[in-house]
Length: 329
Image 1 (cartoon, one colour):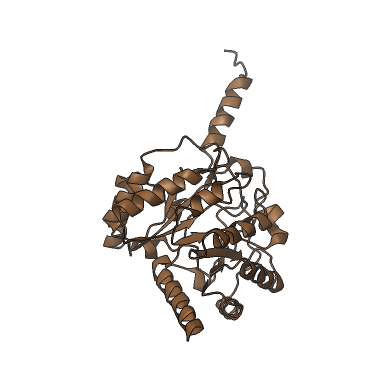
Image 2 (cartoon, rainbow, N blue to C red):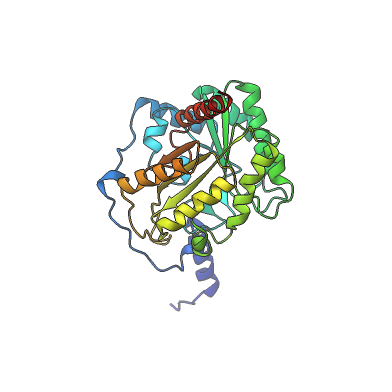
């Protein structure tokens, strides 16, 4: 029996293998070592009754959560408090950031029923404060801005007492998109700078530092009443001086709330961890940030954009009221 080599069959198998990979664009990257986590970064596995109930509601409504897609270490704690962060516009991102575990590829069409599904889930979870984030949708003319608006409106119609925090992409080269979302008047407008400018070419190559900064400044220009928020990862090779310079840049853009957390490497193909920043260093960053005028700072190894968002929103609102009271006294 003669075996005939089928080159096309090999190509088909390779294509299927690539499709099964979460990050096919990263497969040519060299493997990087994954460092052993220090004690302060170890968390308990989820397993409470409330966690299971939250999971059931998420599944019943066909929702995507950033908690799962980004492999958040706080998922067990947050879901045990019914705090799930919804990720809209699908589970596939058009960007390929070196730090992110969200799947990369060509996303599907938007689901017009998603806003109502989100609103229903918020109601069933009885959320007082909800965080809505999304993948980057560079394939859409408005980057998904109107879809964000539709989600905010649907939540408000069904849950008028729930405060809404959005964590948006940068809407790079999407004229008028940012203004569209600002006009929906979320309670908190969050967009993460993620890292220091020097590291953008390797860590966040599809984004532009000063564009992201100007997006947040624009929120305050258009609607000063909206809280603005942004976050940084550390442990990627940035210096202390670079981090404090980003703080100054953020304050120049009148950002209210800063989050700082440890970068955790999803796979060997992602950007390597340079080092684990100690809890003492995080406490020092928090002290510096408050001295620079931020209304609210969350700085710890496990801090993430939506971690303890409900509790922190109340602190943020109280800090603004205290500041306004002091200015009028």
